[in-house]
Length: 247
Image: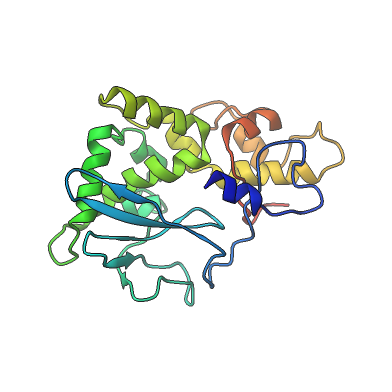
């Protein structure tokens, strides 16, 4: 996956050429992505599921049960691309829908991710939930929690070295463990970190780290992440998302 992302990165004239962080291609949510990442996850016995992630934003678009039936999610706007032949579920794949939080709730989604158990046992359990998924019998809260765990374990770990290391440690030791405060905050700030880097990258004065996104990132925890320099930001993420920024 990392090789494909780098080889097919957005090759603008600058493109952070001195760094190893590639930019994803521009998102085109109305059409099929240039490439799908579809890992096959194997659980205990015959339990298995495929997850489908778009290559232009690494967001989860769908999954299969072990019968090979595809399921996808509600979209934000009409005419957004949905996996053909899939059953569209009654919720979205964002964290607000999967774990809670968001406008009008009094809480942010990241707050519900802090204590998310992402231990090896829970990841295997999540694979089992997807493998056996039946929309007529599986409770929504069960499938949502399983999807949140697998998204963190397999895709957030691609976006963030910190989460990648956390998953490695938990998988190796087999003990209990959660995403934690920093991991949860990183997950919901991928777009902000990406925008701050893209804006910084276009400026002639590389000493400037003062975009609206960068100012928010510089704030100390728990408000911000304490990311005070572009070098620190580059160390926090690997692929850079192309999204709408303030500049």
